Length: 299
Image (tube, rainbow, N blue to C red; front, side):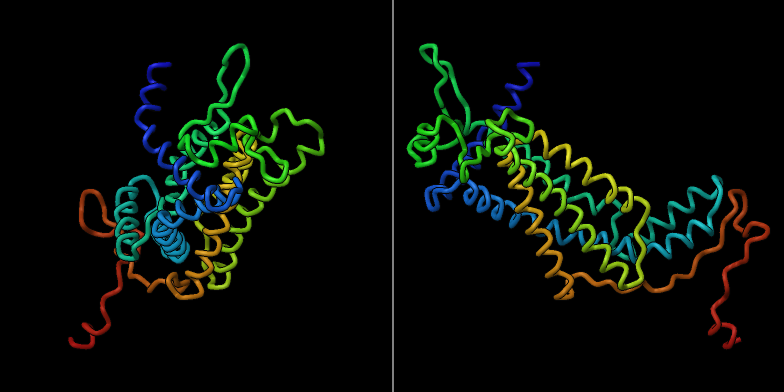
């Protein structure tokens, strides 16, 4: 197991070093850990913004398609029509450019960045035993950087206005008062998650759109899952999530205001008749598809 972890670390080592160099570079410009993390987050979110746009478009498309999806589900009831239902739904998704799992894309893309940033933050406060004493030995950042020197002086403490950002919510804190900022940043991060989802919901409700059951389930449980996650990661990584959420909220607001994402309803589609497995005729009790009125007039 140890050899596997070492192999994974060796693969990611250049990436850790790159992110550490960027953070040290920003810290050299503005010697504040919070600002350095914020600037690094802006760079990362700049790279992820196209995926955020694509994901938002997909979520809105899925919301617009809910009436049509319900029609298809009502039309093709029963296990015998499952294949045809799936076929028609996939056809609907292709026509409208929707992706049922597109809304999860930003979360999936965030995962590797969280892992990388977690390791870099952990490396900043790295300590080794030397001559019977623990001494600071930061990893992943240039040894000649100002950040490296300051971490040596502070013994690995990532100090932001008296708050050690390398600590977690339930780490050992000197006093109860010292733990309050850690509770505050976690609550703020969770609140931003709910605000972002409420922002999308309000726009959907204004246009008369409905959320899918999958979207409702995601909105209900994802903030709870992230709340636990925020409790077990360093405050510096929680800060990254706070800044990234703010950027995502602003990005989505600009997208709606500029018309990049629309909230209109999809065009009415004519549903095909339910086909029997053995014959091409409609099943008893199912109304056949209406013929084109123009053709009847031509006759």
